[in-house]
Image (tube, rainbow, N blue to C red; front, side, top):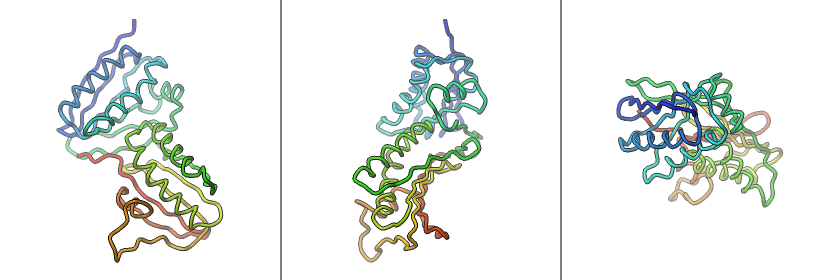
Length: 247
């Protein structure tokens, strides 16, 4: 019978780490959930589920990991749950095999300094070609959501879907030529980039109350920062969605 040991380590008052030693199965996932609930009671800003010492896992147990993240996201006051599986570890390989994850995420934790979330090199990215048509908004929404889940960051999905949809809609409505949507995972933000062949710069109307119901008003409200870069092929409009506010 598979066995597991779970330790809880607190890094200051903002980060709680749940360390799993042993096997990840459907039975041991229940124990992980109990440990995570204990962490939630202390109201941290971030919970790390560390699988570095996992020695074995079955598909059922691994498929329950996103459910644990969803549990933390559905709280009255959501707490990001970062699943840490160092490159080359047993857990990382099993996660890639069973969950088809494009990137394994790790975290550098120093009790005296803020957390920085670091993707394993190379920088993970996902690209979608935008084709004008009635199905484009649904494709963008689905693509952004699936990418966030595949990167084991489901708490990012709603914001990324919202911003990606608005930038894509602007490109389809006002842009020309080939249009692309690119998501990249950077050290402290998930960057959304929409490119097209037109060189006209998008702008917000500043002489009235900003419209936050659609367009750049939504992007400005949700994104940490955004901007436009001109190139020989046209322009790229980018927006950064902050991963987590901790520290």
